[in-house]
Image 1 (spheres, rainbow, N blue to C red):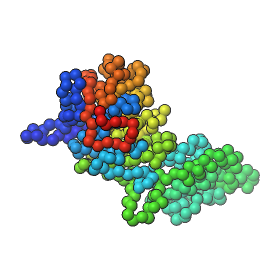
Image 2 (cartoon, helix red, strand yellow):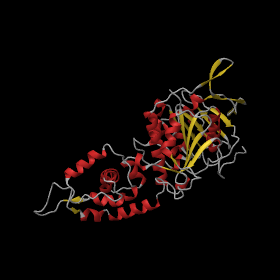
Image 3 (cartoon, rainbow, N blue to C red):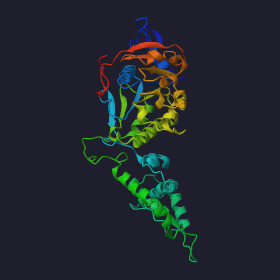
Image 4 (tube, rainbow, N blue to C red):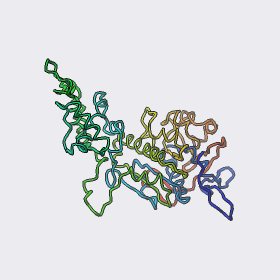
Length: 413
């Protein structure tokens, strides 16, 4: 388990803890909770809309900032604008995602490419565009018709020591160039990559290519905004910011990545959160540190895919994050939004009011004992279970001094 840092009080080291965040409703006393017990085995906050879960999340995050803990907030709806001392960027407005740091699988997901033929050619198309820009110094697609295999292999060798950036806007046109075949007569030359386009295959994927072109025209996440020439606006590479916050201890600042520009595109939002959480893991694995980093994702029920792949960023943090000091705090309306495999990765739970017995049934057995109470909790109260403990405590959460930007939750509880 990753241990959070200790502070000294009268010469004695004590673990950082929340002293007045959780008020025990039974014995009418504050319940001190160690940060390590609450966060180091991941925390799930759940409850219906209006139950107080967003207030709870905000209170915990403000407490973490007081203890100078590294915190990265992935904000899909732009609700967390009022957190002080934070580096907040809005993806697609004052920040961008460097496509050159993404693999073919991530690019395919981001562009919602689903046709098997296109997916199989996507890595080759990316490689071709890299050759075109960095080896041939061209701004056009990489033509493969009548290009010899020897020439192509020579270009690939030169690419190994060159930059790997490329123009994503050309990807649809480059995919067409990947569908080349030899002639089907006695003039076929198999020393060439191809002599003619595979018309039948291109025709079969044409509608998907048109959809891809439309996606490329509307996608602004991977490039600088149109006003990027404005010297008064600083535009950030979010990958760089994540690396900075994962590898350097923060003082009081948190990193907030606002994804609200894509709030209406659930598929793209899911993909972006997947990419960003994996970016956290990759940077931490590459540059291991002794201090913990907490990633918070709000309203996760909207952005978790129905089928969680083994390499999904959220699942990677849940499964492997503790080993390298990356902990996840997740909020969702219902535990039914998460698979049993995901729920089993959480050690701590803060459960506000739930609607149905079925929701309670997927929680740990210790929480299921409070079934009726869970379904009748007033706003701001919750059952708390921390890692490595079977004790469940009915608590009222002390609201933070700041609010987040939503009309759904009242902070006057």
